[in-house]
Length: 495
Image 1 (tube, rainbow, N blue to C red):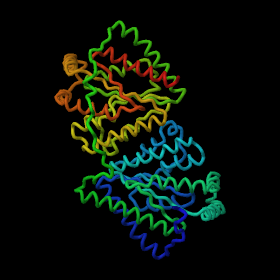
Image 2 (image 1 turned 60 degrees about the vertical axis):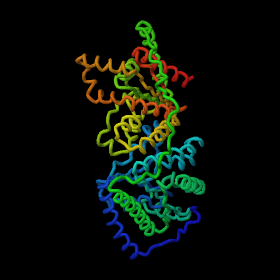
Image 3 (image 1 turned 60 degrees about the horizontal axis):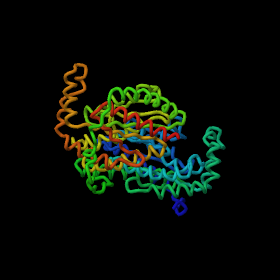
Image 4 (image 1 turned 90 degrees about the horizontal axis):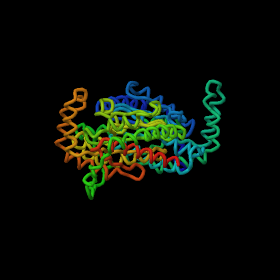
């Protein structure tokens, strides 16, 4: 692909000036329209060292309203980033709707520099292609406009530019030892670039290759492409009456679950107080030991609590963390998304809470709200919640690829027990804050929620992140089972 490009393309000075005067004005106008329509835009620049990425980013920045974008230079990951999945630092940088993120290099570094420098094992960077495609597809499906630009120059041209920079004392510092090493590895990088461009060129996130020997030609081609892609998205939205156009990836038709999982749960399981007391303290002591062991081995742990209202999630979590070191865990309480969270992809706020390797994140409710409350209450479309099963499975698989141990607990209680706990809460003054009219309203929709829960359990219980159903009519039994599940699994993890 790259060797067939015509790198002799040039543009005259007058033609260049005329084109750029118009394109820069158009770029600013389109940015304002995109902001009004709430279009989130991600631009990423890849290519050879000294190919002119910084020049194009600077030229674009001067054409736009600086309040509407952020530029991120992507350097080797720091400690915070190394201790999380490689896409974490890119999820945290995606823009709000109506704003732009500009990346000088990108998430493709995992299949480029990490590959060539052998920073990760072969199976890891090869697996990264699936994760990159998943990431881009999820954003594209959510309305993000992803523009990917690759700036190409020959090995001879790269050497010439390095020499020119080094001859000038004011610019010599810009050519590093790493740059020179990469120049010697030009053929290796060329193979990796070809691989990347082929495998990550998709309808939702295509690559534009820019012949960058002539800087004037490169600038005009970039601006024309930027304006064309953004203008097309704006027209799509306007023709759809300011609603998001049909997503490029529609989930396949899903056959209903063959049986109800919840109907087969034995809610008569119970535990006497005396036996509970004899089990609780040893389990909590073991959890603390395992917390320390996870830290030493740098294994992240994610625990998800879902369940019926009044199912006992809060009490279960308290017993889980009662003897743990609070410096090693965070309990993340998930409520309805706030205005900032609504302006991002729905998984953004959960990626932001991914724990540092060796730490625990305990979610009181989670990303599964998309296929339960958001589905039932109409906060998302049918296409969106059906697609979410695949997106959630992909996210959890990426986390486990990183070495994360994931627990997912569904706390199940009967309708009779739920009503009993509602009444009990209402009768105790210091617990009345736990219940409101919405809880009673949701109780009337139990059949709809039960159908959604059954489908959630069926579609998202995977080998790498299985669901554990907790029979929770007995709070003592439920707390013990959750603790035993965590202890048993983590012991197996380190054995």
